[in-house]
Image (cartoon, rainbow, N blue to C red; front, side, top):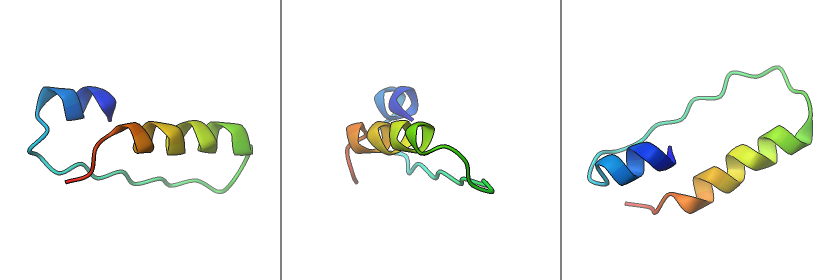
Length: 40
């Protein structure tokens, strides 16, 4: 996400997470990466 945002910040990014659940820490890492990418 960060790379795609830096490459072309005019394009919309979509993130689909298909997960049955699991550990919280990897989910928080994804959330943190989403916070770095600037909104449209």
